[in-house]
Length: 156
Image 1 (tube, rainbow, N blue to C red):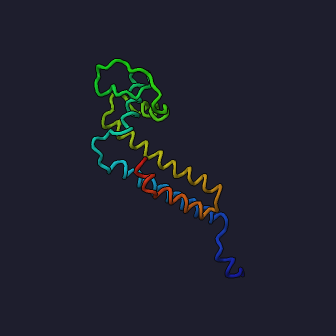
Image 2: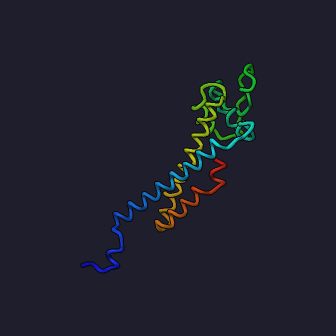
Image 3: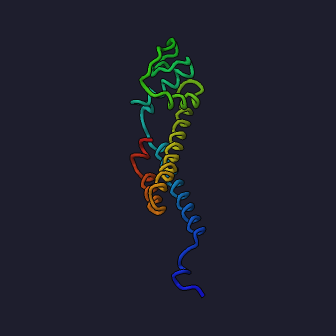
């Protein structure tokens, strides 16, 4: 017969399965929060601030093959803009891939979905970093804090 303390201690395989279950629950929670924030938050006009620069750069990449943040999509008869380096090219290039023509509502929906996906991926990356630096329960707590952080949800 096993001592009472040994019977109460779960096996390493069971502990690992529990950690993975909790991690999956945290990632699904993070995805839910980010998707709800992306699709239930009402913003008018939908493009404002620096998002206009990113969308303009994506449009100019798609239409003219030029990296420029100049807003040419608002006026279809505008000639190709002059290239600039005001914004980093990575995110506009990704947006250009999602944009078939002008930045219409379906494009904005795809961009919001992409941002929610990237935000959720950030939670997974937080886990991968935290588990290298902390004991697994503390890494789960740190991951949960990243998942539930209001700034990381809304600024995505």
